Length: 151
Image (tube, rainbow, N blue to C red):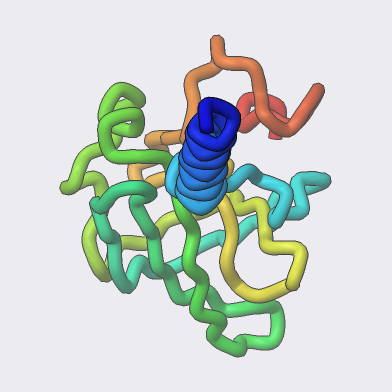
């Protein structure tokens, strides 16, 4: 009888441990954050004289949407993400940094899929102000020579 009760307790403990393990496994994507593996960081794409169509000051990443004319005059619609609004605020960005119609130059790490989306390396406003998604003291996530200060 005592053996049966002990086995029943062990079964309940094992079931509880399996339940918790299952919850942790299913919940792990909630704690994950994507990296920059989706972007080609070998050389940024330069979008000179791009026209801002939308600037979304949102979390988890603010978005800059621009129209850019390629060398053949064809308009490309680009979307570039930057860091979170709290971190970007520390680097001089704000919700009023730019507005639709502003002409800017973007340096973008393009998606490896070659779609017209990417991660911003740096932005040059019409008045010459340069904004980046990290300060010069932070090590580049792209390795040696990959930070905006080197491009």
